Image (cartoon, rainbow, N blue to C red; front, side):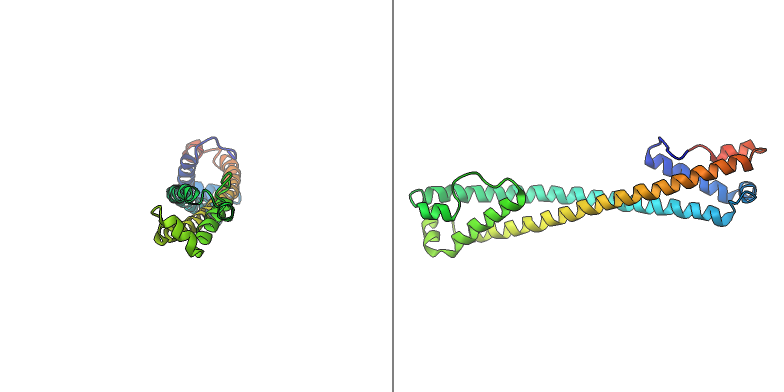
Length: 215
């Protein structure tokens, strides 16, 4: 009884049925009360059930929010990458013969792999470029304006914010999953013990025991 193979939704529905019948049928509650499971103790089981159900609902909402934020992050990241690569490629053309500028803007070599490091690379590129009037004049000859650089910087900061929220939502969902697992163990333990007692208490009334045992 403790380690159920039922899917969570099916299990929690059956728990509600068991507790509801145990509290609602005086014949069952009167019989189990003689073995220590009076209404107050049955209410303890009901409270455990409500706790698990509430945490499960919060967990589901957290999962939905996490999925939504990750979808937004992918969209924003894709946009930032397109903007950055476009300006980067043009900068490589505009400053093809200036080794110092190419080094300052990190125009050559591989791009950073991790999102955090990559965002720092993009921010550094855009900030350094926009801070040098002569460099901006040089790249303006290829259609890149101050507004384009500002847009890239703004988009980069938006991506940082969205990525941070994604991490928060991931941790929140993980935390709720752990809490749900522990509370579910408590509920399953309570159900297991109660059914053992109910089987003894209702030994002469198997029909009543069958009314609550199907978990």
